[in-house]
Image 1 (cartoon, rainbow, N blue to C red):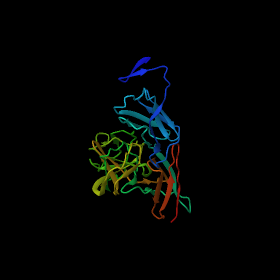
Image 2 (spheres, one colour):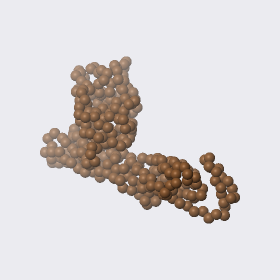
Image 3 (cartoon, helix red, strand yellow):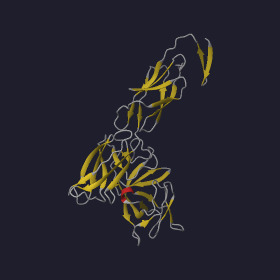
Image 4 (tube, helix red, strand yellow):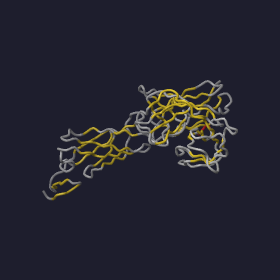
Length: 352
C-alpha cells in the first residue's frame, strides 16, 4: 500500500502499481413518461459520489468505478443521488440504492417528463373561412388504463399537486348586477388583489372569470372591496391581467359529480391533469391543503378571430381533441405530441 486516502469518512488504501479495473455498479434506461420510449443521447448524468463516474449511452446511463476504491464496503448499503437532464425535459433526481452484498449491476430506470408544449390554431367555417368565435375545444383521449382519465384545464396549474389533492366539479351561476361584466386594471401574476372599475354585486366567496374567453382564468373573492375598488382574492393570480380585461362574477354553487384524485405527479405549468374519476361541473375546484383552493374551467374556448391556444400540454404521447360550436358538426383530431422544440399547430374547418 502506497498511500491512504480519506474520502467522506471512508479510509482507502492506494497501491500505485496495481492495474485498475472498473465495474458498473448501476445502470438504467432513461425513458419518456409520455410514451415510454427511451431518450436519445446525449443527456447529462451526475452522481453525488466523487469516486464513481456517471455516463450516458444508447441504452440509458451507467455508474461505474474501481471496485477496490468506490463503495468498497460491501457489507453496508450505499445510497447514490443521481441527476438526469435532457433538452426539452424536466430534470429528475433519483436515489439509487446499492444494497449490501449486491448483485451488480443494479437496475435503476429513470423516467423524465417533457416540458409542457403550447398548441395554437384557429377554428373556421369550412365554406367561408370565417372565424368561429366561442368554439370549445376539449381533450377526449387517448384512452388510459382504468380508472385514469385526462383533463384539459382552461389554464395551467400555478403550483404542483400532492397525492392528497382533490378535484371536484362545482356549479356556477352569473351574479345579478347592474354591471354584469367588470373591467380590470393590469395586474401581474402573483398579485393577491385586483382593481375593477365597478364592484356592485361582489361579495366574498364569489368566483371571478378573468380575461377574454380565449385566455380566461378563475379566482375567488376573499372579502369586501376596499378603497379604490381593490378586490382581494383567496389565492395569488396564476395569470397576469391586462389593462381592460373583462371580469365576470359568478356565484359558486353546489358540488357536482364525484370527487377525483390526481394520478401521478401534476406539476406547475401543466394543464393536463390525470385523475381517477370522471368529474363534471361548470368549474373544477382543486383543493390541496394547506394551499387555498384554486379554480379552473375544463377545455379551451376560441376567441373572436377563431384563434385559440392550449398551454401546458404534457404527459401524453398524442392528444385526441374535440371541437364543438353552435350550428356546426363536432370534429375529433389526434395530435401527435413530439419532444423537445416541438410547437404544434392545428386549425379546424367546421361544417354545418
